[in-house]
Every structure is written in structure tokens, then in C-alpha cells.
Length: 212
Ligand code: CO
Image (spheres, helix red, strand yellow):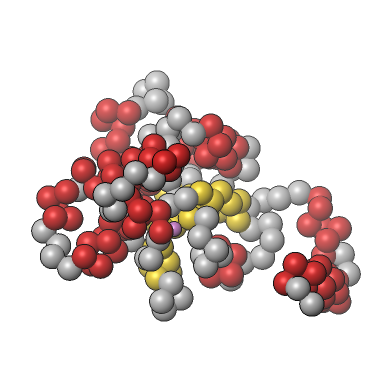
């Protein structure tokens, strides 16, 4: 059987397993969603949010793109954030990068990547912001890993710059924004422990959109 056909067999098996454990599983799933998390991650096929977080359908609202970027003019990611914060009222927003990220690697490569140039430019901008720290790392792989982490940190800051997050946080004390890295080679999730309150205060000294 081809992998393509196998997918539908897998689906049947999954439906049977879920309904055997709870006959109303899909009926309940169809009713509504109340995810506690918004997860913004890389499109990389090896980084599967629900699997590594051990959560079920309905628990995480997900957006993925190349190198988990949060770009101010990207209507797609901005719509996702707005909907998740204002309507779903998520309590946590996570940006999850990963080591061995092809997007970050490409941004460290001195080459014309065609249509990817403007996208990857956002990562080169992260490099430029942190070039003193990054250029001081002699080992290329360690520098690459550090850029993955700094890219996550900068995308968290981009989320904190949004009106939706700033206004909701003043009104509700949520969502908090977290930066994670998935260490593919070990399967481990690493929390970068970004100090959200401090980052929010710092960002609002320039990007305050709360009217206060
Ligand atoms: Co990636």
C-alpha cells in the first residue's frame, strides 16, 4: 500500500480508537473549541506540536510557517493572533523554534534564495540586532543554535507589539507569551524562560497601543 492510501486506513483506525474509548468523542469535538494555547511554530515536518506537547485535538490553536516568524505585515499570522486572543481568549501564546531549522540555516547562507529572500530577511534582521553576541560564537553550529533561540525571542517580541495582546493583558492578565525551542535530536522541549512582564514593559515604552 502506498503511504498516500495508508493515510486513510490510519484515519479509520484512529476514528475507531477514539470512539471505542468515548463514543461521543467526535460529536463533542464538533461542538466548539476552547484551546488554552496558541502555538506558532515552524512548518518543518519533524516538529509536530500536539505530539511533543502530549495534547489532544481542541487544546492548541496552531499556526505554522517557515522558521516560525511573526511578521507585522503578514495578514495570515496577524489574523491568527487576533482571533486567538480576542475571540478564543487563549491564556498562553507560544513561539516554538527548533534546532536544525532549514529556514534559519538558509538565512545564514550568503545566497539568493529567490522568493524566500524577503521572508528570510526577517531572520537576517534578527542576526543584525544580535550580531555582537552571534559573531563572538566561534563554533558555527553553536552560532546557528543561538540564532534559532534569538529568532524565537524576537518573534515573541513581535507578538507583544500587537494591540490585541497588549490590550488583553491589561484587561485580563493574559495571554502570557512564551518562547520555546524543540531540540529535535533529543525530542526535548526547552523553555527559554522569557520574562514576559519585563518584555511587555520594555516594548510598551515605544510600541504602546493600549491608549493608556
Ligand atoms: Co524550521
